Amino acid sequence: MAVSADGDAWFLINVSPDLRGQIEAFPALHARPDMGRNSPIEGVFLTNADLDHTYGLPLLRESPALAIHAPAAVRESLQASGIDGLLSAFCRTTWHEPPREFAPLMTGDGRASGLRYRFIPLPGGPPRFLKKSAYAEGHSGAYVIADLHSGARLLAAPDVAAITPELAQALAEADIVLFDGTFWTSDEMLYSRPDARSAEEMGHLPIRSGSLEALRASPARYKAYLHINNTNPMLSLAGPERTEVETAGIIVGYDGLEFTL
Image (cartoon, rainbow, N blue to C red; front, top):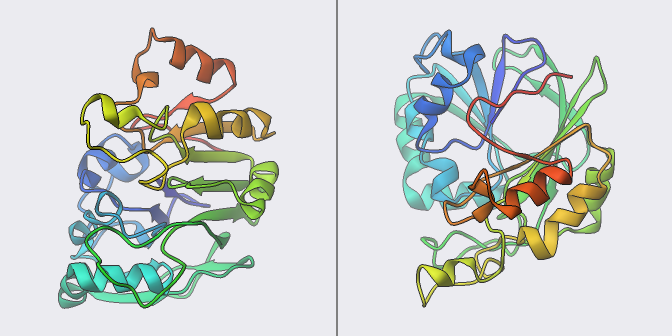
């Protein structure tokens, strides 16, 4: 995911290992695809430290400077994984504790980006590779990003274990909602692996019994599911799950999907 107010300075929300492929599918970034010295990517927002959200960070190591917005608990995990040390060996990284209340988002050279942002903490523990953490919370969350000129708000919540009151309020105020669509049902993974954990045990609220009605009720102009596991039946274009989601006014996310407000 990437956001920008002016099309010049871009900020990524999580950085998956397939970052290059995502950039190739996104025209605004593909025009300058090197991800290094000439990249328009100014910074990164991390919603947690899961590998599928952070393993693309080394691809940004040639940036002259990289601002990383993440809670201290997430940085602890990235220090344990070695990603933090790898990045700092190649480029100047600055870590920013995301604010709970709206604050201006600045570019690397101190210019105003035209955006404000805040962090919504959500239930969740550290990634499985971190056996012990110094932090009881702050391992997972969502971001609200607001355009100072239009007033439009984006809610990015790709890992949601539960809809807290603060997240519910953000759903009611957002113009664009990008939401956790990992699993359709709680027991979805059991069909492919008998010893698999449930969706809730992996920190994901199922769509059918959890998030579908919440997103249906949201007044947001655009609503989309993302972070979709390959076992999710709504990926089938002809399936009833896809029909149910689209009837609720929700888009099933895909690479290259763009919104402008």
